[in-house]
Structures are given as structure tokens and as C-alpha cells.
Amino acid sequence: MSSRRGLDPIDEAIVRELARDARRSYADIGAAVSLSAPAVKRRVDRLRDTGIIHAFTVELDHAALGWETEAYVEVFCSGSTSPETMRAAVEPYPEVVSASTVTGEVDLMLHVRARDMRHLERVVERLNAEPFVARTRSTVVLSGLVRRAGAVGSPEL
Image 1 (cartoon, rainbow, N blue to C red):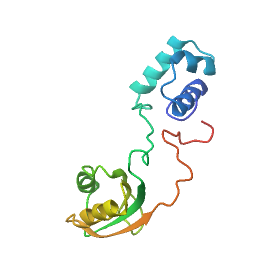
Image 2 (image 1 turned 180 degrees about the horizontal axis):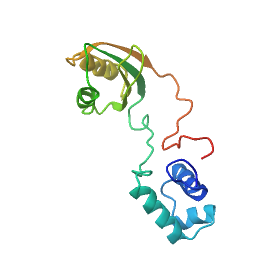
Image 3 (image 1 turned 120 degrees about the vertical axis):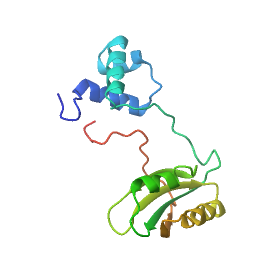
Image 4 (image 1 turned 90 degrees about the horizontal axis):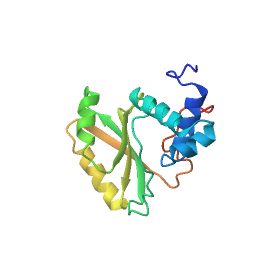
């Protein structure tokens, strides 16, 4: 057994295959990991029950959907602001792809997508109007070089 939450090498291989394409059939995954389709299904069900797999999703081409501008917005909070307050404030923004509290000067790091620069500017203006925000600093993405949607966190996976 691997030390990673009870994953054995076969579980790791199944997770790797699902990360590549979650729509593959259990039979197809089974062929790749030398198991029957029912055995793969049982393992996937167990991985879901234990929380290792918590969702199956799609990877979108955001530019094709009209969301061509991407940025990282650093949020500096005034006073002591709880993560729950930050989450409640930014969760309703459809433009926020992800939000994380971070170490250092910055309190909150947002990954944002917008239709264009004007849309991004409006999002940043709305963020700056949040009561706990002292200021923001934005960095616009020129090119996304490596994207690992559904990536597993270990090179050996």
C-alpha cells in the first residue's frame, strides 16, 4: 500500500487514467490497468466513498466560450478577515475560477476569467468595493503554458 491515503499502485493507475479522460469506460480503464470492468467500478466507487475522487468534470475551452481574458488578482485585506468572510464575498463571482488564502503580504489569491479587459476591470472594481478589501494587485496572463485540470499531485502518479 502506498502512504497516500491508502492508494495502492492499481488505484494510482486508475486515478491517472481518470485524470486523463474521466469519460473512459470502466472496461477501457480496466484494460489499461489489467482489471475487469466490475473490479475497476468497485475501486472507483471506493475512491469516491473515501473522498479521494469527489467529482467528475469537463475541461472547457474558455476562449471559445468568450472568456478570453485571464488574470491573477491579489487581495490585501484590511484588519483581520476570516477565510469564511473572504469565501462568502468571492464565491458569488462567476469570474472567480479559484480563491485561496496564501502566506506573505497578500491575504487572498484569486484566479479570474473575464470576457475582455473591460470586464476584468469591472470585476476588480467590484472586488475593491468589498468592505474588507484594502487594495488589490492584478497580473494578466499572456499565455497559459501548462494546465493540469484534474492533475494528481505526485509525479509518480
